[in-house]
Length: 83
Image 1 (cartoon, rainbow, N blue to C red):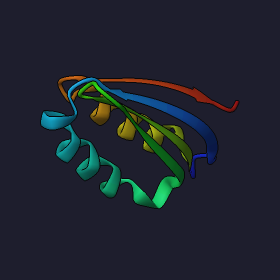
Image 2 (tube, rainbow, N blue to C red):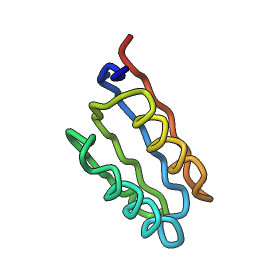
Image 3 (cartoon, helix red, strand yellow):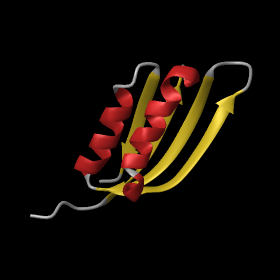
Image 4 (cartoon, one colour):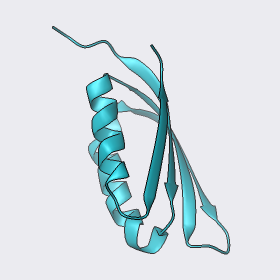
């Protein structure tokens, strides 16, 4: 049985850019096939940044991406997925 593709918005807050950026970018690269759009904004004056992602994939694919990102120290992730 093939899982249905869904659209999701994922917000990623990177609180420790110096230590987490490389790992975050590696994870995003591994999931590039489901990323439709990406906007990254550094927080000037702080070692932090925000990434907004538009995703199109199965719930398993979206969960894999958000789970891996959420396991990176200094990173917080929230997502909203279509029904």
